Image 1 (cartoon, rainbow, N blue to C red):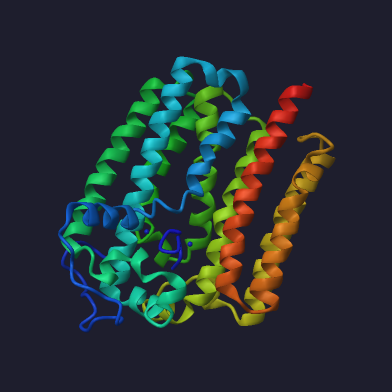
Image 2: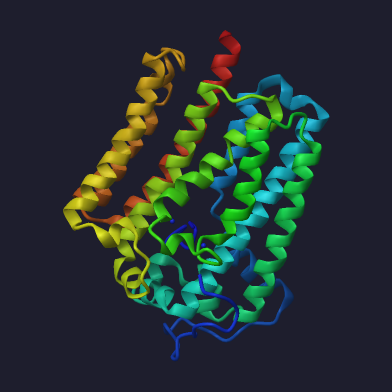
Length: 340
């Protein structure tokens, strides 16, 4: 997910299935370090806490909710939801790393360009944690995430059935990107990357307000496109490793030209949704103007990543574009509240 980037943008049948690479995958690999602070840092890298992009759903929802967010029950719901996100995504990416370590795809995808991809972000591959360490962490994070989101449903000021079911479904499916149902291995990786973003916005908005609006749905859709639009660039770089383990990403299934068209279509879809929302009156007329920096950032990303062929640089620009999107949505929500 960024999910391994959700890179490779969440599995094997269970512990003991598959195998780790027989030889050290890269000269930067090192033996496990036992200093408590070093191990804590390794667990934080395993959870990919540096990739905050999914967690930016919280300020988006808070700005959409407006004054309701000041209520005690709303603040408690937001806090529990964020903790659940951290735990469930942490479990998902830990399971993804375990899978990538066992089937050798991470060694293939990271071994030749560790300086670019930061081998240290893969603590199993680097030797900072053992497979048993990662499994314990993933199971504990999953259990904690379920408890947190159970608390969300108890604390929420509203419980529309659709929102409750959406939170339950997300809690069940998010950790199964490379584990359990192995959603990323059944041609669903791109849908997964976007759907996680959607699930982190609209259901939470429903729990806080008791309803779903067309404007909130538009923002949820745009937010979900963000991780997808940097995950697809990662997948372009990971084609060899993903094909070797049978992960049928769009990058693996399409030709270079097909991938270019696919990514161009996703980028154009983002712009079309922004413009259409204003034309249909779902969003204010000035909504596309506030989000114009997003369109500019997306154009630069496509130019660098697909036209010039620097897909990893394109991925980095995609991460930045997603953060520009979040900033623009916050500005739009505040302006909309001030003018309504």
